[in-house]
Image 1 (tube, rainbow, N blue to C red):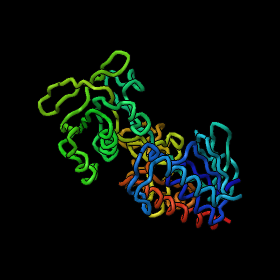
Image 2 (cartoon, rainbow, N blue to C red):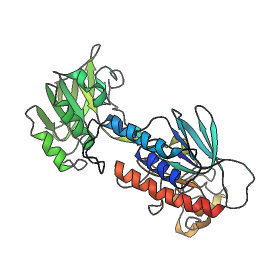
Image 3 (cartoon, rainbow, N blue to C red):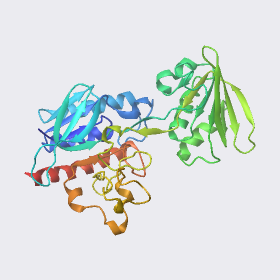
Image 4 (cartoon, rainbow, N blue to C red):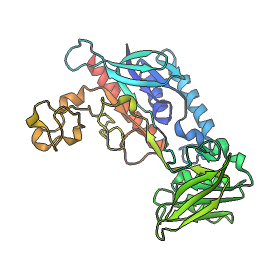
Amino acid sequence: MYDLAIIGGGPAGVAAGVYAARKRLKTVFIAETFGGQSTDSLDIQNWIGTPHIPGPQLAKALEVHLREYASDIVDIKAGERAAKVEKTSQDLPAGKQVFKITTDKGSYEAKTVLITTGGARRKLEVPGAAQYEGKGIVYCASCDGPLFAGQDTVVIGAGNAGFETAAQLLAYAKSVTLLNRSETFTKADAKTVEAVKTHPNMTILTNTEPVEVSGEMFVKSLTIKNNKTQENTELPVGGIFVEIGALPATGLVAGLVEMDQFNHIKVDPRTQRAYPYRQTPKNDSDARRGESAEEGVLLSTVTEAQGSRNAADESFFGVWAAGDCTDGLYHQNNIAAGDAVKALEDIYLYVKSQG
């Protein structure tokens, strides 16, 4: 039996793993890979203490740091993918829980769980996109960008990731056109935007969205629509780089914790504790908002008259979350690591209080 199971190998998971080792919490660390989404970046400039570091190098540094302290305290299960987390049916004293974590290679039991699973890239959903994935539709510029040297390229998405991808492509592509659905760039740093937009081979189209991908064996063109004029234009293009965000990887805790409408895990920002999923009362008179009494609803639908969250349930629930899989307002590597450390401090006190 482990004190803690950490699931996820990005900055959040590794930060928690290092702290768990130093606090001597017997931990199973389950990660399919190290580094998280940052492995796709060629030059990370905001990882505090490191002015420049490539994503793959950061991933390796995270793994090395964890293994340096793991010893016999943190049991690292690298290359394993966690599929499900559930409470066991063991007969335990009141207020105590045991969780079973099932992976593609086995299962583990722990008193507490920290979810740091991050997210997966959001796919482009227009006609032709699925057909040409890997044939001109690209989700990793650092992996495949150089293949498009000397070609006309398009970047879809105007957050930091989109502008960083554009900056990378400008080093070898013939041209780069970046599409933004809105008029302004609210999701990108002003410094990043300015560094890219002044390049002579750079074009930025605002109020524009993709409509259809066309080609033969490989991508040949992208049809776009101006949202103001409603006019469609066909752009000759060899590569389309998609940077439209990520979807939280939280399916493994579906039905266990409360989530928002985007499936981010809801957490208490003071401690990173997750809230338990609550079933609708079976009494029809208690059903609310017109839902069947047999349907499960998230705790957020409970009305004031029916009471707030049960403090005792929360205190002894035993699940925490940190990083991009949570409903935190901001998602960055440094924030993820800090939130995970915050969670670990709370987990340590919780475990020690249980005896």
